Image (cartoon, helix red, strand yellow):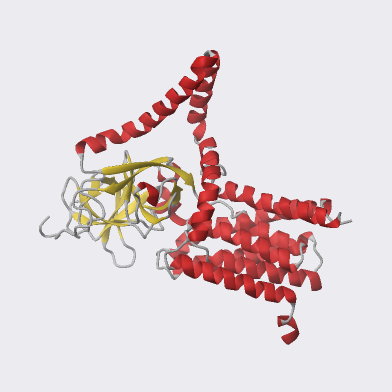
Length: 169
Length: 277
């Protein structure tokens, strides 16, 4: 019985990631807000890692990262690695040092989402020499980070609901 | 530290990272089998979802067609489905007929946009045609309104398109009216406004607002005389004061749904001497 609930929960997470991938990549499905759209998969994987132990967390981080990478390039890379490692360590940190609460979850989602997007921006825009970096950051990345954090709060409640509803009794 | 490294979960993490590294290296060496498999699996899903969001007009058309079909007899229904499929395809291809007619050497492959990623810069997108239909990297991507980008990567069933709004896009260009030459490239500042920049133009050039900018054909990647856009503004670089023109694409690149890939043309790959032109 216990394993059945866990399997249901993992299936629900997997479906959630797939649906968010569609939402993120389908043209015109989600409107641009202030010149950008949120990265749905990033906070989804992060919020799962708050609730799950480190091995499932790293696998959902890897799945979210691979989807993020393949959504716009032909190879896995930046997000597959960073999200796998981030989710693994977040899970460990939450297991030993933090209580899963709204404030903690929001703070970690904000720090990791903003951190990963800024690192991505540095590598793939600034260091890639695409020019007008500061302008582009405030025109597109700033709103992307803000929207991603807002979406992260909603996904935190969704994943918490899934975790509580499909928890082993 | 030693205890930490001996944890089962850390060993799993290291194994997963090793697998990701191998897949990533294979992909970088030109063997993106993971993305090919993933694209193959999600292509159908992406096509369905992108078709569902093709705008109100398309929905109304489909709805009207659907109502019309409902009024027909059961025998005619299947024939009508075939008929409308062909009609829709014809309407899509008709837009490129003129291009093909005036340039018989052009080999054109129509495709639909199936994916636009949130994280992608400069409105790059994925189309539903790949190397199996003859598309290769650097092929120009057009609509009936002119060049909108080039194929930046390709696998068997889909291709990624980098748009004219990206700084990665570079095309030799000519002002059709004044014959001034330069390079059209995307820019971070103007990309959000559906504009590229016409740079490396002479300080004494006569380029002015309203001029049409076309490809020069130098470089062998883009054939000559493909429309890139219309000059909307003349500006000077804030750092080195060089003159450049802002070129607005005739196509709404952020929302384009149907494109055509120019897979072959006369003199493809031949680098022309600028002086000779």
